Picture 1 (spheres, rainbow over the protein chains, first blue to last red):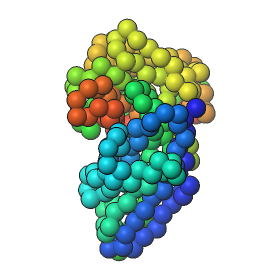
Picture 2 (picture 1 turned 60 degrees about the vertical axis):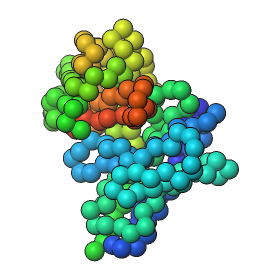
Picture 3 (picture 1 turned 120 degrees about the vertical axis):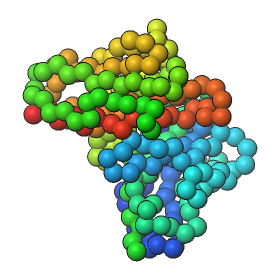
Length: 113
Length: 115
């Protein structure tokens, strides 16, 4: 069965510093991988996805993620954090050809001024 | 996403009551989903529907039922609510084709409290 692990409940970073939110996955076959963000009192918003091709995927708001098949990871990164990036971030996986998503438990990102 | 709406946004009810949460979408997507979010557990899939005649159980369907009244409407019912169903519930839609393939679009959520 497929699963997603987000090992950090919370990540703290100072504004202007680079940030990384970690995600590892377990799935049979070639995975589709996603990052979503949830702001307070809002639904989830799509950030980026990896389907195939270039391992470095660029998404919304300056975020990017790197697919690493050997380490089964899909870490979310941003070169320079903003206070407004503070939110709850979810990694999700879908087995190839399916549209059911399995979500991680989420990582809260706090960016301090 | 304003194209996916949920009603009500907040609901407080008592144990044993029947509750219906409604979801409507104007995105024209065939596929719709119901999730619940609990702190520390992320989102878990309750039910999903790939078209009006197709309903499937997710990982935590016990105690819930759904109805797909039309392409645009997907309702979640709690026949007899219990306190451990207190959670934030999200509806989502997706399209199996196009540039947004496999992306899910979420409604704003319904916060349900069962006393």
